[in-house]
Structures are given as C-alpha cells and as structure tokens.
Length: 152
Image (cartoon, rainbow, N blue to C red; front, side, top):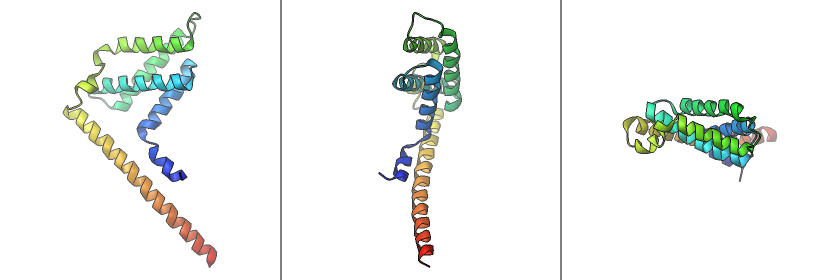
C-alpha cells in the first residue's frame, strides 16, 4: 500500500480517538489497549452528552475527557488498586456524573439536530476523501513535472 493510500484512513474521528487515548494513557498510566478502550467509552459518553444538550460533539467529548483526567489525579494514590482499576473507577464516576445522558445519541438519532450532525460528519468525510484523491493526483503530476525537468 502506498503512503498516500494510508492517509485516507486518517479521519477526524480517528485522530480524536488517538489523541484521547494518548491523554488517558499518560493520565492513568495504563496500556495502549486499555487507553483505547477507555477513550472509545469516553467518546461515546461525550457524544451522548452533546446529543442531550444539543452541543458540539467535540466540546462535549473534551468535557468528559477533562472530567475523567481530573479524577485520575484524585485516585492515583489508591495503592490497593491497579492503574487499570483506577481508570475503570473513574469511568464509573463519569457514568454517574452524566447518568442522564447515557445512550441519548442512540435514542435521538433520528432527531433533526442529530441528523444535521450526521450530515455534517458525512460531508466532512467526503471532503477529506476528495482532498486525498486530489492530493494523490497532484503528487503524480508533480512527479511527472520533475521527471520532465530532469530530461530537459
């Protein structure tokens, strides 16, 4: 697989997942696998929060992540628990904190605000894909122009 073909798999959602997982890995001192699992759960909770209050997904995900990382500091001295258990405890605290919003995005997936969010996300994905295709064509054209210049 060529380098530019790999880029099409890098989406804003993937970038957010990786960034959140990295924050959790540092904040909780947990493994990469544990941090990705926790990040996926936090992102889902953030999307539910955004749906419940009709807010931007990114802002709500950031709020949930900050809440969890703030609480990571509070539980770090619990010597009788592993770091993974501390991370799970903090996630449970987040579920309690945001209990009214759990699964809201699923329940309201057909609502107008959520349909608009979904449409915006699909447009963003299409723009990203189109941009990657244009970039690929431009790089090939650039390589051909360099080759022509070398001949002359």
